[in-house]
Structures are given as C-alpha cells and as structure tokens.
Image (cartoon, rainbow, N blue to C red; front, top):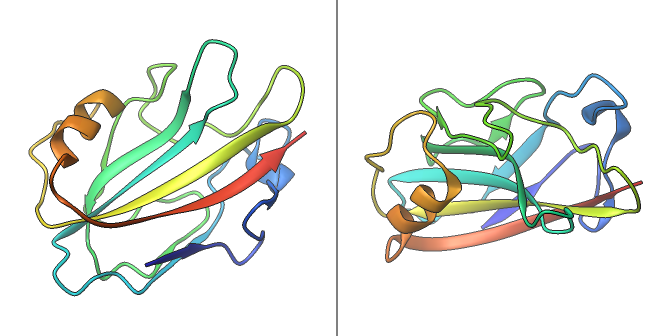
Length: 144
C-alpha cells in the first residue's frame, strides 16, 4: 500500500501553505495498492515531537478503500472525523512552537468498517483497529 503527495516527498519538508503559516488546509494525498480485501480506510496525522506528547492533527476512518485521492481542504466521502488533540474535528496544520517537528500521516487498510462516533479519539480508534489492520503505510514530512 502506498501513501504519497503530489506536492511533497516522503521525509521532505511539509508544504508551508498547509500549515498555520499558510492556509492551514490539508495537503493533497494519493493512495495506491490498497489490499483487495479492505473494507475501509483510516488516516491519522501525528506529531511525535510535540512537547506534551504525541499531537494528533487529523483523524478519520470508514472511508472507501477505493479512494485514490484526498483533495486539498477536503475529506473523502463517507469519512468520519475524530477528535484532534485540541478537541477539533477537522485538519489542524503543523504549527510547532520551536524546532523542527516530524508529521506522520499513517494510512490503515482495515478488514472491517468501524463502529465509532464522530469526535472519538485516537485511543478509541487504536482500540477499534486492533486485529483488523490488513496493511498500513506512513508518509513523513518535517516542518520548520
């Protein structure tokens, strides 16, 4: 399974226009080679370098495994949005207070749809996907 972006490379710089220094909208993402048995996809954007621990910038699940593109400032049809670390249910762009931080998009192909509610947390997502991950992949970008 592959997760890429047409505007940045893996382990490259996060595009500033998709951070708090720009329009703070999600960057475009491309998805390929999802396992044929997948019933849904989930996506989490984490900052593991945040001072207070891992910061969740974006979280969604139950979108179609046939999804090939996530457009700028959008979510795939059918996606359910979870709660970010700052209690928002939408994309929160990178905005590190100091230093360079890593931002990791993790895409999961799941063998089931999830019975979670909008606004549920990453901990609830992690518990729900346990034993249901067919494949996962990361896309990493650094900012500042």
